[in-house]
Amino acid sequence: MLTRGSHSTAAFCTFAYPSPSLVATGNIDKAAIFNSEGNSVWASSSGFTVAPAEIKAVVVSFTDTSDVKKIQSEGFYVAGEKFFTLKSDERSLYGKKGKEGVVIVKTQQAILVAHYPESVQPGAAANTVEQLGDYLIGVGY
Image (cartoon, rainbow, N blue to C red; front, top):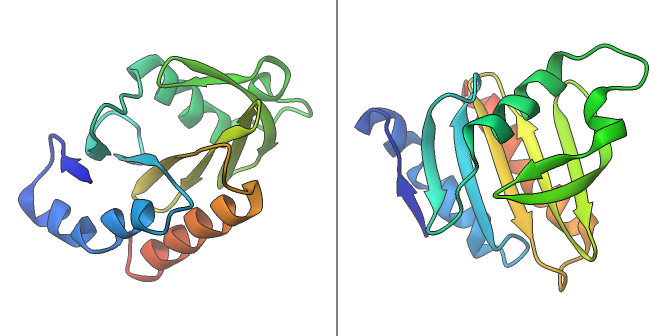
């Protein structure tokens, strides 16, 4: 279950339908939604806390145009856990730690941060989050 962060009720209602369904798919066990600047949490799973410095590194990675991005060579942290970067481009960031991982997708107005457990195939988790990202872009988010 995702809980509301520090944002307007109207913005949260827009996410009320798709956000809980992200975890309900079974492909994601915890998630958070931030604004596109990463400075406001719109919703998050109970106990899933992405630190300000962690989300800032994610935001920077989306605009990093280096041949080898810093996030690719150093990895990144989500909720205090270090992940090795599998993919990093202007829309998506994928990371893995052992058999678990994270899929992060940026839309026009939001950043989706989703964690999948070791029992889920990475491709299934990525498809789930990317599809939600496509949906949000389609409705103007």
